[in-house]
Length: 310
Image (cartoon, helix red, strand yellow):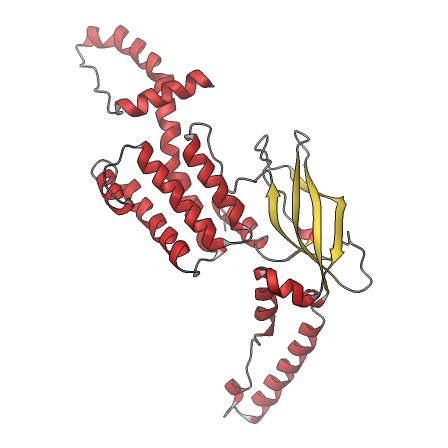
């Protein structure tokens, strides 16, 4: 089966949304050069132990990982009424599973962790902080230790964000990426603010986001549909807590499609001179009318400004 780059990116970020062995930590995209060359420098990792109750008190991911581990894949209730041999085998599997879970790495000693990632392409550094679970006898930099990063600085983009995207949208989106690692509902709320900035940039009329998206629907129904789904996620993040990391990863991919419009606007300006030259040479000779410019004035002016600043 062919895996698309989007699926691969979602899988990568979904894996590091929870605890993962240090040896399996994926290579990330560098926030400086954009290349997928950012790797953990294990030699820079340092850690200080904390108690398990302290970790439970402030780390949502740690609590959730332990709760998930407590859920048996087979319950004793499900074996009631089962044939004798099936019940015996099932009980044996439950026992073996319980024994294996007792030795799971998550039961190690929780540590506050700091370290650095290094880009093998441009040499840029990114600081990382979070939690590391260290079993008895393991050193801090053991590749088998579980690790969960909750803060990257500078923030690592989860999707590519073009320089053609206006700064107000880009800034809110970077905040959504930042909160993704430790507070998914807040990340969804930040994404909603990015949508509001998008509608503002597109001069959408209306007293609230729903009306503004409806205003955009007349000329861009696909974009409006995508924005509507992002708005629903943002509402959930603002008023509830039922937002998971995977929901955000799908939302970021959807918003990436929306933001690609800015690159098309910029490319229109960059190729306009080529179009004019072709039309001047051949259109008059063949009596072909020039095409109407279907890009609105605001987009053209913004693209011109982007190109001049670049």
